[in-house]
Image (tube, rainbow, N blue to C red; front, top):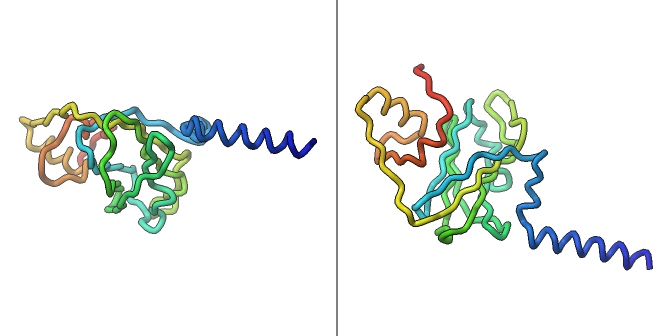
Length: 168
């Protein structure tokens, strides 16, 4: 009888986890960033940290995207200085919420880790993003450096990832 009760409790917990995959993102373990929207079904996400990243700490176990069902999306990862680029291998489904997840065991080259893991929800929607133009070439250069994007169009949604700018 005791084992039946334990089995029922475990079964109920598993059902809740399957029905509500976002439940795995307990607020005390994750810092949540604001939700973003992209009109690109193969959007590469650029995460800019405040220090150069130890690339040996970046892998599919600690930087990943999960879909609306809580399943990991296959991605390619690259690191350059303070920038982690997360590139999906297949297209996002329109209108669905995804999460970019960065575990707190990512470390800087100086060995410092994150205080909390990070997640950022995003939605793929075919509504087009706006291209931003700059009248100040110096500002554009600074933004391109911060985004890790030396050329190509800069979109309004990309600017949302910038929290501060400073000249070196």
